[in-house]
Image (cartoon, rainbow, N blue to C red):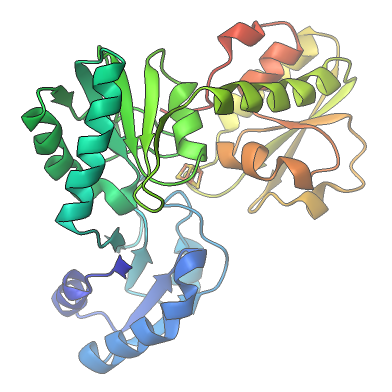
Length: 329
Ligand code: SF4
């Protein structure tokens, strides 16, 4: 169950005497859009406008829409602040509700597995929805005799991981313990650090070390990289979303591609979607926007879509063994 605390939103609306407020929801929360908009309108007297464009992260602030509708404030749900804002914005994280008993049980089971693997010092990390449980888990692991660190992170909260930012993981540990669900972030951690990675999933209670998943992921990515090795024309995609726009990176890639005597062509879009790429006569694409696009949506693109580091491997600038997660920080 997701918990949303609207109190800071009420306070901010009152403080700013806001009249029109633009609301941004992640896809998973759109079912509660009407409920939240109604409550805000009823309690504060504002006019709420809900942006219905897909929103996958705090990199995607609907500032242009806010200007167009004359909003005094943006309320961005589900993510924490990532970049500077030009319009006053309040970020409202969503937190899962988990019982202490469950957390204790998970920490105890995970401790046993870590001890069997002779691990003494761990780095704890998580995604935004579970971040509030890290301090509790830290104490639980410490009670079991582990040395536990929660990294500080650049542009993110302590211990937080994002698909483009793994700076919230402290270094110098025997292993990293990721508390969260899904494979994407866990794999991102595994390919951004040298340490062993264990996952503790509060949704299915599974605790395990990432091993086979890493090999399988690498095999799939290498199959795509291989297809791009002989590419003669390469399209470089830039997302114009505020926190994803990386012109410098795109220009560096262009220079690298041309050094290898291939054609390099720049493309820009707000949202990078498979159907937007149909009909573009290049052999392969490289994406400088959100690293998730090339990973999560790989099967939807008709031509290979690589992340920048993967293109380096395809062009022989880097070895496959040096495969790394694409990060912005
Ligand atoms: S760029 Fe991607 S991973 Fe990074 S915050 Fe945006 S949606 Fe999340």
